[in-house]
Length: 230
Image (cartoon, rainbow, N blue to C red):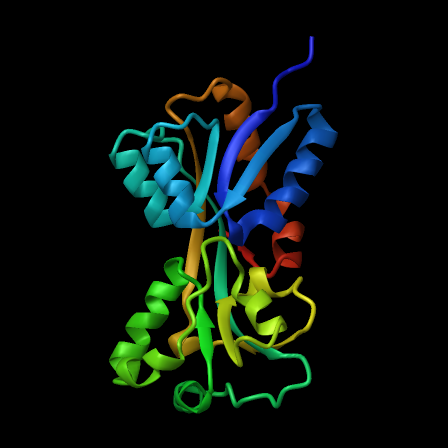
């Protein structure tokens, strides 16, 4: 009898990583895994609405909220990776200075258009622009990506001159140049975690998957995807 696939949902930021790691887990164990990657806000809403998942992978604070609300199993939270934000421009465009905070601020002010993720990193960037006192000035030039649409794709199409997104979401996008990660003093790091759904049909299989996703064996894949193991 074929074992049903573990059903999961994740934000877009971890899609390539989870695709690689779940394929390796299936090859090693025979356990099929089907994880749907959507916008993080949409994923959380679906869990909140009572949709049943064996595994949920989202930003750590989103996982905490879902556990507190009784949608995910308390004690099952497993930190997976830390992910930082990088800047990208269309391929062939002049590369802005990214050496320090003042240079990044100047690049943002000079950009004819810019975009950043609607996820946790975007919220933190918006707060940074507020702290810099430029949020109102750049608002007319700010392009908000539709749900589930990567900022990198807007940059690649030339719709956005300057894009900010987690490095893991930019490294596989063609038609862009990654200028580099944000300087350390303003870097925005998101921790992505996983937990088991309270309605999981395969909690034991889900727990085994989370153990693998957290294991040392998963570290090379995390680094290949522009992340660091948690």
